[in-house]
Every structure is written in structure tokens, then in C-alpha cells.
Length: 328
Image (cartoon, rainbow, N blue to C red; front, side, top):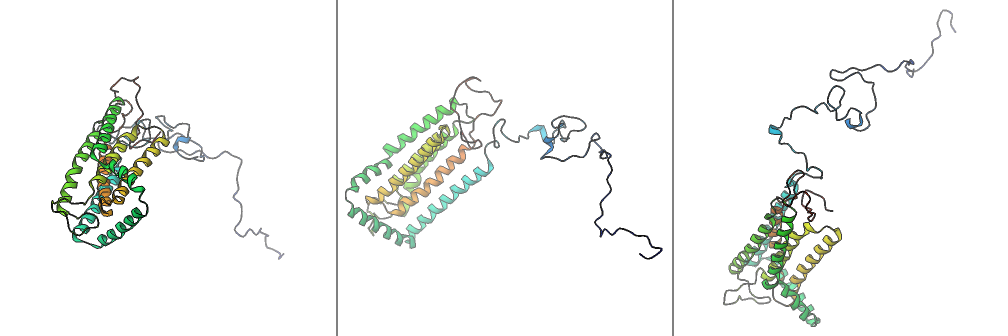
């Protein structure tokens, strides 16, 4: 060591900060009492003062007047998850789905009317069905029975039973606007023959496998049987599904309805009653009408907490699962 110099420890910038044994210094804010610094677990609800009014509460807006006029802001359904119906996301999706179905139906109508490229594919698919039908003649009788489920005398009474059942169950459960889904289903079913007959007369498509249309003006596009069965059974499922509590029963009922609709359409082509595009166009028309009815049904919902029940507070009724709630 050089004389006259003081030895200093070399720390290379890693020196420790001196700490004392005194407790941490209190921090005072403008609108809270002195508190010690502490780690916030997750939110303001972790403090002991959560939910109280006065100094020290982390929720300082509690007890203040609402900024919304007349206190009309409602964040959700009391006691149940979700927002008040109609749910904006589902309403937009259903309206978009209805528009897509109408656009695809219009596209197929234009293709059949002008003899577009899809008509050539229609001949190919029809030829495959004819070869399969000739190879399996025993299936023809079963296909005819299945195609009869598209008759008005069969499909419409099923829908009427579902309409009455949905109205009775909705009234018993004190559903808000319980009449809206059955009414929308009746209107959609009444519009179906008007649309089908108008398009049939305008397009005037020949019978399957033929080049010239019938002289009486009857057309085969779209399929009236396929549209009747798909709309009637689809609307019946839509009306009754909210009152089915078991998830397994809901799934089974949905799968059965979709399988029946598909079987009727395939049977119509198998029996050489319609072109494949006739059935496909009817399904697109079904998507349009059923999605429109489902969108109207979003405005009908189970009663909120605090709303009077039509049968009294102790009345027993079916549990309704609508758009803004979760299925049981």
C-alpha cells in the first residue's frame, strides 16, 4: 500500500443498500387513511375494506350517484350469467346466417335459370343416384316412405303441435313475450309456400333427367317437400328445445331432426322426384327462415329476478333455457 492513501473496498457497483430494523414508512394518500404498503393479491376485493363506504375503501365509487340517466344501466341478469336479451352477438350472427342462406338460395336460382356450371354438376350427381337406385332396388320402397315425411299433411301438424306446446309451456313459465317464437314460426311456415310456388313458376325447371319443362307450367325448383319437412321439423325443434332440460335429450333431439331432414332430401333424389339442386336450394331457404325465427326468439326470455310471476311466486313450472342463459 502506498503511504498516505486510504484503502477503500472495491464493490464494482454491487453495494448493498443499508437497511434499518425500523418498520416501513407509512404512506398517506389524499382520500385514504394511513396504510402500510402491501402486496395486492388480485383485485380491490382482496382488502378488508372492500364493499364499504368511507375512507380506506378501494372502491371509491361505491355510494356515489350514477352517471347514467335515471339509473338505467344494468350490467347483467340478476342471479344468472349473461346480459339482458337480445344478446348482440347472437342476434348479429343469426341475421348474418339468414342473409347467407338467402344469398345462396338466390345463387342456385340464378344458376338453374341460366343453365350455369352447377347445372352440369347436377346432372352428374343425378346420374350417380340413378345408378345406385338401380343397383339397390329394395331401397326404393323405404325411400318412398321417408319422402312422405315431406308431405304437408305430415309435417305441418307436427309443427302445430310444437307451436301449441311452446305457447303453453312459455305461459306456465311466465316467459317474457312467450307468444313471439310461436307467432314467428307460424309466419315463417305461412311464407314458405308463397316463396316456393313463386320460384317454381318463375324458373319452370323440367323434371329430373328431362330437357323440356312440363306443359302445365309446373316447375321442380325448389323442392316443396324438402322445404316443408326441413322448415316444419326445424321450427318444431327450435320451439321445444328451450324446455328440454337434459343435455343428452337436447343433443339426441337435434341429431334426430337433422337426420330426418337429410333423409327426406336424399329420398326425394333417390326416387327421382327432384334434382339434387332442388333439395339443396330448399335447405338454404330453410336456413334463412329458421335463422329469422331464432333471431325473433332472442327477444323472448325467462323472467328476471324481481319480475312478478303470472302464476304466483310459488308456482312450479318448467325451467327455460334461452339465449342469454346457460343450459342446465
